Amino acid sequence: MAGIAIKIGDTATGETEEKSIQTKMSLQIRRSLDGNYMIFDHPEIDIVILPEENKIISFSKDKASKEVYDAQNRLFNFLRKKGVINFETVQGGNIYNSLEAEIPVSKFEEVSSIQSVLFNIGKFLQEEQPYYSFLEAYFNEEEDTLLDPDAEHSTELGEIPQEEKKGSIMPGMVPYALYYEYR
Image 1 (cartoon, rainbow, N blue to C red):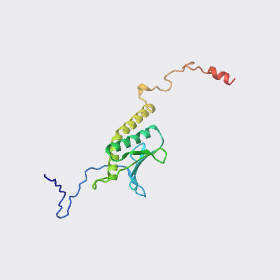
Image 2: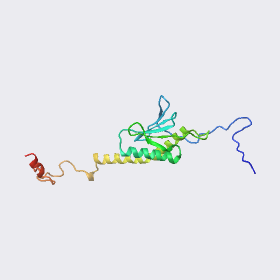
Image 3: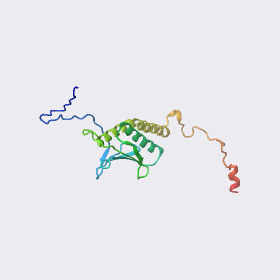
Image 4: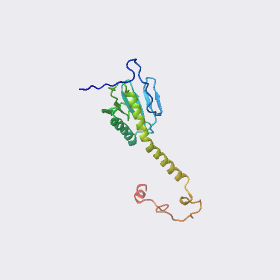
């Protein structure tokens, strides 16, 4: 039976091959005083990685809404599919409107759990970016349409003449139920 031998670098001299950078990613990330990574790139949620506790937590940016929970759910589903969190540990955090999950310890020496999570969060943010760019462009266009309409959708002041009776509600008429309420 033939054996399989794997040789990495020059084992005789103890030199190993210098690893090149495989990919680069730009994130708006900070480190807290206690060594946690805080990611602020997502428009609806903030993501915090706690390396000492092997946890990832997501918080609402401004307000609690269905969209915030959906974003958190998409994040943890994405990380589960990539295999960088224990999905059975996803739960609500002790801070209102937060979700958290445990990061498994890597069984491979050359793979850092924290770097893997950071990379996959970056991938998630890249995947989410077109959707939020579209929403922003749509709302900006809608605002421009309302505030500065084109000639077809606007009229000059005085272009439409005044009429004595206009619309469905006649001036001075009180709705039937309210008339007897306040009499």
